Image: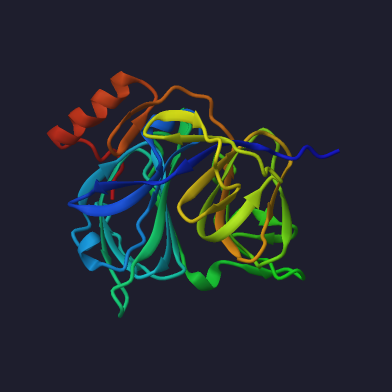
Length: 303
C-alpha cells in the first residue's frame, strides 16, 4: 500500500545578491538547514536583464559539496583550478563534486535576447566523501532523456530513473532524483518517490495543486513560519513545496499547465558546519579549510 505525501511547508523564493553582484532568487538556504537534508541551497537565476547577472561569480573555492547547475536558456562559462574550461549551454547540466577542494569561476552570459535562465542546487557530501577527489559531470541537453507520457506530461530526467529510463548522472551518495516535469492543463499526475527521502518541488512556471491539499498551509518566509489562512492552494512560479514522508506526490492542474523541478535525496543525518562556499562536519574542519585557502594549501589533489 502506498502512502501519499502531504505538504510540510511552502517557501517563496527571496531576492538576494551573490558573487560579484548577481541578482537572483533564493528558494532556500542556510536558514532551512537541516530541514531539507541532504540539500543545502537552491538559487534561481532567471533574468532578462543582463545587468542582473553579467558580473558573475569570479574565482572562489568550494569544499565538501556537490554543486548542480541546470540551464534553461543562456550560457555560463566556467573554469577551475584543475584546468577545466567550458560553457554550460541551454538545456545542459553541470554536476560538480567539489570534494576536497576546487577553486573555480562561473561567468554567465545571455542568449541573443539577453535572456538568462537556470538554477544552482547544492547537495551535501557525506563525511566519508568530503575530502574525495574533485570531479565533473558535464551533461549536454541531448544526453538528458525526455519522456512524453500518454496524458501529455513531459519529464526530463537529469538524475534518477522512471521505469527503465535512467538519467545520465549516477553514482551519487545521496541517491538523488532530479526531474524537470511539465503537466498540461486539466491533468492530475502522480509520481512515485522513495519513502524516507527528502523531497521537494520548485515551480518554474504555471500553477498547480499539490497533494490534493486545497486548504491553507504553513508558509516559511524571512525565517518565520506562519499559517496562511488565505493562501491560494494553486501554487505558482518561484514557490518551493517541501513534502512530508510517503511514497507518492500528486500535482493537479486546471486552466493552466505547470512546470516544476522535482528533487529528492537520501538524508545524511550528519552535523553541518557551513560558511560561505564550504560545508564540513565540524567547526574545526571548517576553520582548517579557510586557513588552507588563505595560506595556499587548499587544493589537496594534484591536477
